Length: 198
Image (cartoon, rainbow, N blue to C red; front, side, top):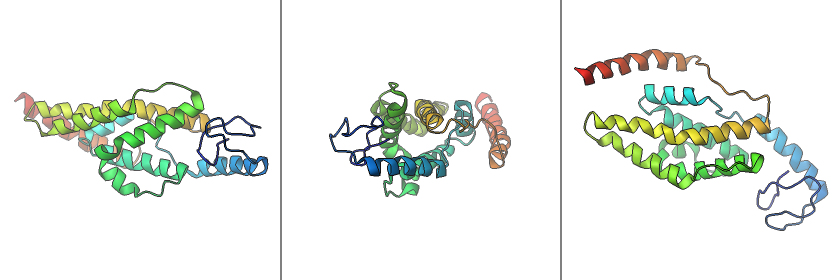
């Protein structure tokens, strides 16, 4: 159950929010629980395995990150009713990495009370590692390591949704366009490696 005033998770039967002190109406409380459960089931989160995140990011030369940010912002927008332009958050990923990381770490922490890495340092790391694409070869390859900063965030997202909906599975399979990426991206990556070694 969550406080309607500040969004803090409170114990069932609480009369006041532990965070902001706002009085909780027992009548509207039950409605908010049901609404939360219903709405979260309607959301389609991007819960994928870490290996899938890394493989798709590397084989698309980082383009998959745009899709990843878009999907995660879309889920967060539905959870919190942020009223934001999701496409813009997905397109300008380095600029909006910090708020995304911070909010998902907070959501996961409310559910499992687990301590997560600093969202600020991860966002700075993501920004800096993305700039490395501008280096001369072969040093521009260091830009691929930007995906490492997304791993703790994906773990938090997976853990959050696993608690909210235990039946929600972590997707590690490749279907449709993802399989095409594996083939085409694999071929391009192979040519890239050959070119670097030549």
